[in-house]
Image 1: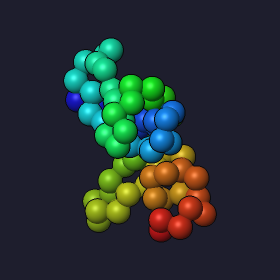
Image 2 (image 1 turned 45 degrees about the vertical axis):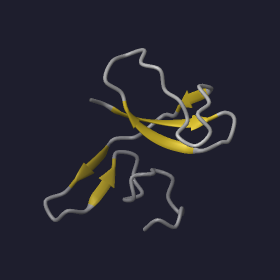
Image 3 (image 1 turned 180 degrees about the horizontal axis):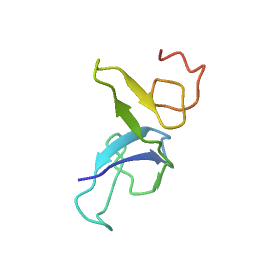
Image 4 (image 1 turned 90 degrees about the vertical axis):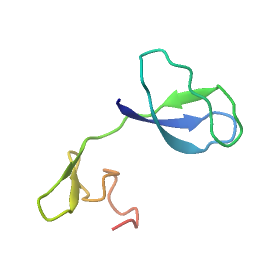
Length: 70
């Protein structure tokens, strides 16, 4: 099952969801709104030492750098 990132258009919560099949209905876990948008994600890779790096760089997986999650 692929893991997708979404953002709710109503309450602006960002969340992840495993989706079993294309076209499955996704709703916000906070406000239950079905008005969500799929976010563009980067791939993350786990190294042998357990650390993570993203295809976009930044090391944290967010790919933005300077986000404070290092």
